[in-house]
Image: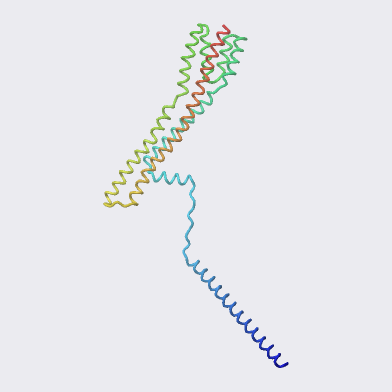
Length: 264
């Protein structure tokens, strides 16, 4: 009985040892296979060509690239329209901001001067105040001794002069607004003619040749429209500013005439 038990124990130990050795061999085999795969992947990555990632272009670089592709002839003229139009628009904006004044405060100062020092004191107040409203007041006060009718005529006439000064340069801005897209269209037409000349010279309608020529031709139109849109925004702002100043001039002129009638 003891011999049988010992024999069974030996057989069990032998089987457990065989299973452990088999499992260890299988683990070693899997580890070797994984190591081989890792080495092969590393070698493949080193052997593969390194493709550089494309750099993301900024908005300024894209505009510069498209401007060069459009050609220097018409694109340069369109850019010149933008520069000149912006220069005139900025000059008008500065002038109109300087021409804007507080007409209510000026009217109160003129009224106080009329009561304290007469017309000469009121004229001195207008002389020391900037803006078209003060200039109109000065002209009206200068003719106050000739009657109210003459004051009204003087105010209306000099108001027209001041309005002309406010609108100075607007016609040139409007010209550049109309000229920029027309130059762009002309560049597009000339570019299309060049594309068809290239097709005729090649003797074959190549999609890449046609697409490239049309793309370059349309760039002038795009830039012309962009210039027109930018200048149109400035133009509308200037016109609205002029309208505001003109309305203020008219209201202040009526108040001045009423003031002169009251202090006559």
